[in-house]
Length: 170
Image (tube, rainbow, N blue to C red; front, side, top):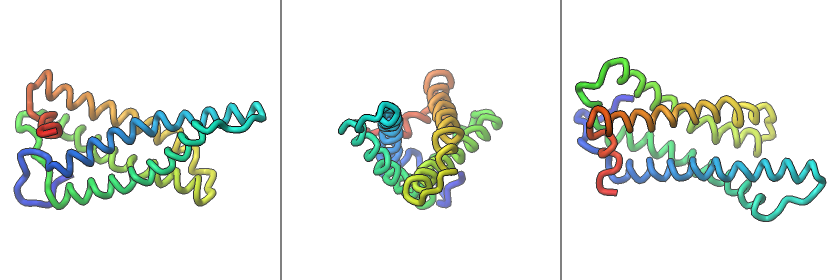
C-alpha cells in the first residue's frame, strides 16, 4: 500500500511500531486463548461444566478480537497519515509485489477475523464460524509466515535495514 504522504519516512514511527508489536502479541494470545474453545467442546461432550480458566480464555478471545479490530483501524490510519518507509531499491520487483500482496492480505484478514467472530458470537450468524476457524485462520498463518520469512530474508540474506525499521528504538 502506498503512503499518502509525499515523502517516505526512514523508519516506522514509534506509534506504528507500538501498534505493530501489540498486534503481534495479541494475535499470539488469540491462538492460545482459542484453546479454551477446545476445552469447552470436551466439557460439553462429557456433560461437565466448563472450568474457570477455559471460560477466561474464551472471554479474553472475544475481547482481544475487538481490540485487534481497533488496532488494525489505527494501523491503517497511521499508515496513511504518517507514511511508511520505501522498499529497498535493490529488492526484486516480484518480491516487492509479494510483499504488497502479503501486507494487503494481512490487513484484510485482520479485519475479517474479528468481524466473522462478531457475526458468529454477537449476531448469531452461524455461517460465520467456519471461515473464522478454517480458511481465515489458515490464511492468517500463511500470511504471517510469509511476513516473518520476508523480514528474516531481508535481515540475514540481503542484509537490509527492513527489520530494524520496525524494531529500532524498541
